[in-house]
Length: 231
Ligand code: SF4
Image (cartoon, rainbow, N blue to C red; front, side):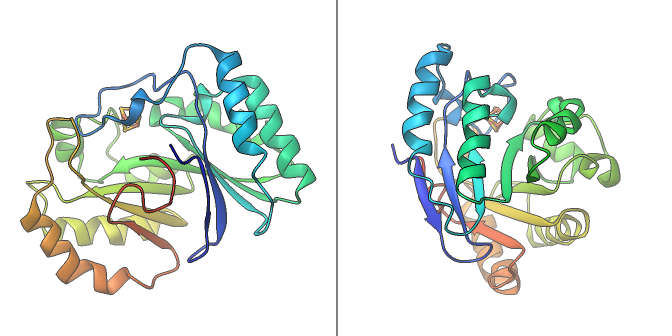
């Protein structure tokens, strides 16, 4: 599995896919990638150390993902991220977190006080009913202000039956209003019960994609390996 890549377009950065003890939530109806985990923190650290050796600091910007939340990475890995970023002159670090951990984010920001931390939330949509009844995301909050309070960036998931151009446009507009940057993931076939809806994906490609394709605040992943990691 590819665990390191360089993203050259839009907000250039290096990206690493590390391994933690696994997503504590595991209930999102569309997800099957939380299998990249290991209960043994020492083994995780050994793997993560090899991956972090590749980081060069070329853009002073590093995105760290781990098929779950940053809080599932072991302490040694977190320390190593800090020291690698310090020694390579990296000033911005992106981490992901589920909403369940929102009360731990302030502490994390303090802990990484020498860096500009960007916390990314897997939000998927602002539509509360769709998000919680269909996607089962586990974000028990309706207010965009409260949802975005602790986070700087968000992931959205499009291409599922029940969505249409209007719902996706609304998510894009609210996403750009409440977050610094957003990342759109198009639903890909996986082992979960949720399947990609080709009509919804066509609506996105024809009506939404052309508007945001060149927007520097928007990443769009047509395939979930488009950042060059995972698979
Ligand atoms: S999408 Fe994220 S939070 Fe949801 S089950 Fe998968 S890894 Fe866990």
